[in-house]
Amino acid sequence: MIVLVGILVVVAGFATRRNPLLVVGAAGVVTGLLGGMSPVKVLEAFGTGFASSRSVTLFAVTLPVIGLLERHGLQEQARTLMNKLARVSAGRLLAVYLVVRQLAAALGLTGLGGPAQAVRPMIAPMAEAAAERRHGTLTERARERLRSFAASADTVGLFFGEDCFLAVGSILLITGFVNATYHTDLEPVQLALWAIPTAVCATLVHGARLLRLDATLARDVQDVPATGNTTAAATRAEEKTK
Image 1: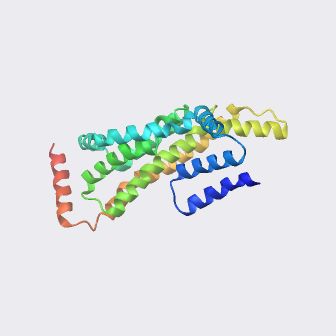
Image 2: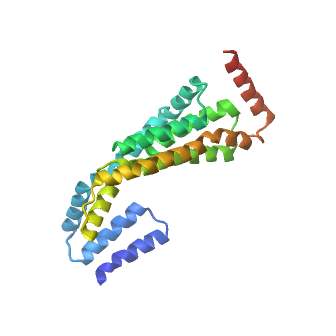
Image 3: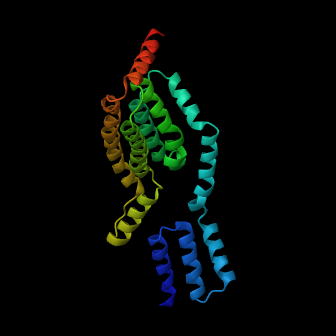
């Protein structure tokens, strides 16, 4: 029972809002020592766990890389690209990203996008640039709405697209559970095929919401000062003359 002190360490650490990684690591050390393990054995257990689940710790490499890209102008380059694409609106851009994300997930490429890898450094800045070119200066409410829709495009595309892939973990879990419990002969391809209509419906429903986003943003920016609206009107007039 004394090894359960590690749970108290976790509870106390989270209650005092300590760093989650340090809390979990300290709880593991305390549990191992109270369980009769030597410090070397505890360290060996940490190393074995890290080596056997390297994919879980990929964020330790991904996030610094994304940070360096942002520091060297990734978001600015994304905005510059959108300024060159005059006909692309924020809603259309996010609708296209939704379809691409869902098709990629259906092919098993679930790591192709993501909030940290794609939405924050590229998709959201591109959508903001498209909205600012069309509507002028965005209010804080409009900017937060736009970012939330950018994140939702990624989430919906991944959630409903990955079930169309045969080797995804959820499909294998369902088939294994059903076959073991009910003694059936359910194949992963059957579940994947039944997931396609749901994915199509999700694309149509959320895609329609994304296409209506431009009208929603136009209502949100009505309270922007006249200078911002004048600048936006001048930009649109210039684009029409071109």
